[in-house]
Length: 107
Length: 121
Image (cartoon, each protein chain N blue to C red):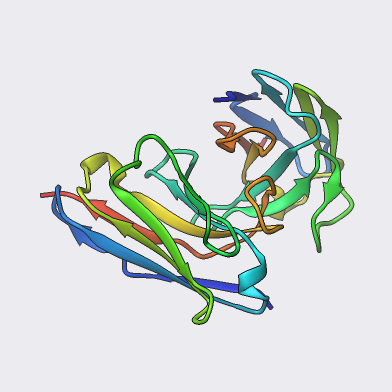
């Protein structure tokens, strides 16, 4: 099973600032990597798939990069609605596995 | 608009059974693989089980293998999860999730609102 490790566990950012979240896979997952956003009491929402493709309706301030084992989610200018927990997920190997999450909180 | 609506959750004693349903609408249900993903209170996401679009292939996490059964009725646009021999560690919110394609090697592009399963005596 591929282990996905996200860092940091918590990221404190001021509104309008840039946020950079990392995700590392224990072995290569090619570009088969997705990012999800989850707000309290809500289901996860797909933000990015195939490492860098924004899902339908996702604002351009969200971008993804990376391949192989190292991936990054960047939020260029944090808005109030972006404070949430973010999960990465690999779907290259069975079973699909998630990272433990990064909480983006208001600084 | 894609909608996934789970039902069938609640409180059950250890060793008991529950059947979850997920009613899908807004897309061609029979064209997409579906999964169940769970989230224990205050924890992260854990994939539970998947089924291909036609229902011919299923897969399970080791932690539920032999106890849970995933199925689907494409004529009713409904996904199911039969959960037997429930354990306290199965307590979680269970989400129904749609894959972007007809097989497992796609991410989840839509999720239901989730349903709480509590296993406790």
